[in-house]
Length: 340
Image (cartoon, rainbow, N blue to C red):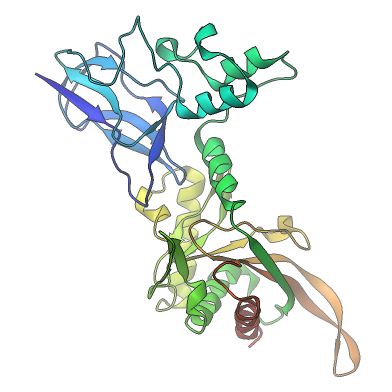
């Protein structure tokens, strides 16, 4: 009796996943719930436990391969032919859809290549190497880097507009900048519900919760954990939650559910943000607010030049579904709350 383990549906509309790392090898005896495989999606890397006990008969998908949900990844128990897969010595489908697309773009005949990937699979590096002379050091995009590449490619498909204005942060405790911004954003989103929304199947879905993602740069790449209930939590509660999520992000221990279901995103890179940077939408959300470098600047107040702690605030939005004036008014509402 054998068990065919298929790539599970990991939620949030994800249709495919990358085999980041196998935690078992063929011939190994495993128990139910033993660590089996790490799957990378466009949001996080998830460790999947084995749903069955037995001997790992065959690993059918190699590390680095991207496959759709429902693909048989491994057979546990007595080996038998697996529909839709090929034997180790005969692999008619030796390349993923991504690699096939690259081969078509570069005019490379896959049948003429010998794959260097697991079980003879043809990798993207194999295709690009056959397309022309190699120049420089090459490193396949995998894991979080590949996720960022795919995710940001989708973001560029959306026609966006970015609005920018100055904000006086003199009254804001910069040690609690992010939770303070989250509170101001959540309250302002109640006035501008079309920004607390997402695009699904051609519809704009208005959301009545305020679960705001916070962009965190880690050694492994950019992740966006979600702070829940930003409208109802106190500033102290938001501060504690932001710190907890940031620590988990840097440690690589964020749970999948902590990266799902955001309704809007806030990004602030501190002094690294520069005077202004263009922010990209966190698809399928329709808006993102950026807080850029905050410095003492000379400004005019009541006819006199004075020093204030100033920074730029931006709102990038999907112009297909959000009107420019509404996005600007939302940004001004956030700034007004920060300047109280």
